[in-house]
Length: 260
Image 1 (cartoon, rainbow, N blue to C red):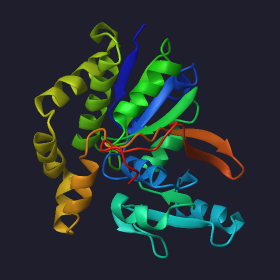
Image 2: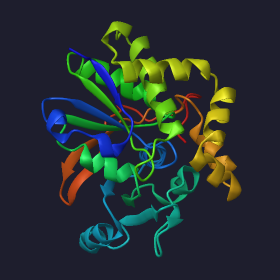
Image 3: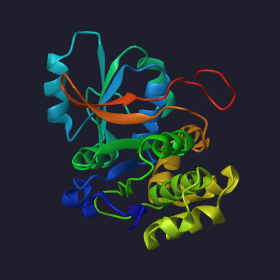
Image 4: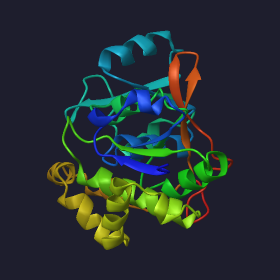
């Protein structure tokens, strides 16, 4: 039985297969899952991933005034009345708040993954923490790493992120023989660009990375590229307003040993 598999786009998610006891780990490196990781690490109460702006507004209407932040983009453009889903910026507005997050790809992928036994959000920032948690609590289960992609297209940065996560699983004791071909391909790709300098080349060369550079968001990319800097473990749980991501990490520390 395949232990670890990588899905290349959210459109390729097999919901019936996920419902058969699988563990899903979703990647949207630029930007959704990196933003989720950063927000929870900075002290957000939870992140509610929604499919679109209309659902976000419906949920916000039921939340306490002053207790939430609307965050979102559609096809790369910040939604009117929402904050942009940028990790560095979010850390300044989300402590103590519920973040209602709507993105074109990442939050949609998380919601599509709901039939799985457990759903996590991972990024370059927190893959070591997520892999350690999964190997502790889901050691005998099949793990499906899901690359969100971009509006039906393959994304280089998500594939790299999934490869880093596979590498972290192997460091936790998962054997290479338990990888599917897609998981092996992602892992081998990561190994070619495993240090942060080379990883920056991958992120910057990607279509979304080029777009972020054109809009002066290089600092966000540099932050996202901090491999293993955060210990947040975002897991999808049923909350009072629907599915929400909560931090399962026992502590919130950075690589340097301080909270962000």
